[in-house]
Image (tube, rainbow, N blue to C red; front, side, top):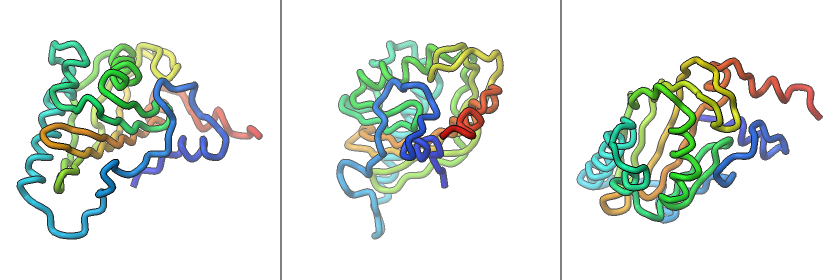
Length: 197
């Protein structure tokens, strides 16, 4: 279970982070309304979902496609994809906005990004995802989430769930333990808010 403590803080009227580049939203369920799967599902559909996720990881998760970011994303994502990001980063709609609001700033603000290394991957019907820590490591060079460069590498603990539509990914729910990442950089987000009324 992943509890988004910063999101809970925002619901209580405390914003633990500077203004984010994406929209802050309560993450909804799938646009298709079919996220609860109670009956046996097609193994062929699960395999197709697994393949789509793995293809995206091979492209996006290695940071080295050599393509412009939006072209790289278009290999594996629908143009009108939705990225339901965590508090502190926010959500984005369409490849263009996702590139501008999250993926581009992330790449520009971190050096020495390791390839992604998820321990567990899963798929059922047209849903799938991965988790396992660290997903990747990176060193902040300044700017991301309004935070400074630190000169030290940190672990990103991420849980990703996807919905596939046809051969590409359409929705992505993302949970990142940002409190732990920034704590590794010597920045205690929770301590900044202790004792505030």
